[in-house]
Length: 130
Image (tube, rainbow, N blue to C red):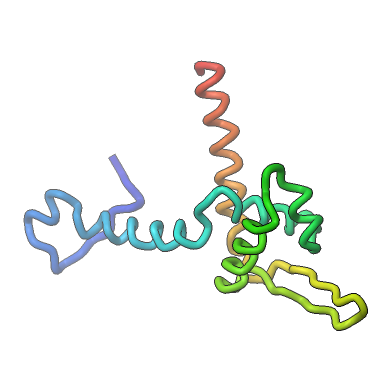
């Protein structure tokens, strides 16, 4: 069976080849790094909400059921640290704050759509017993 996760490596011993240890880590480490950034109940829904045009704190919060202001504030800070969103302060009276997705956030689109498709198919499989 072909697996796209297997890569050739010239510096691995027989035991590692047999177990696929190094090849596994070549995939596991970057996947773990990705999950560290986008994992959790709220990060992707926030990105999706912003992607459909919600830029203000309350608009984002109102678009996602169950998201508290405290959690949203924390998640927005995390997303900003990972350069996925930008916080924009408009020096007016009163001060207006909005959030915009960065071009870097667009790199998550294939992941979001793949997760959406998988979720739809999985739900059908489990509940329709296909």
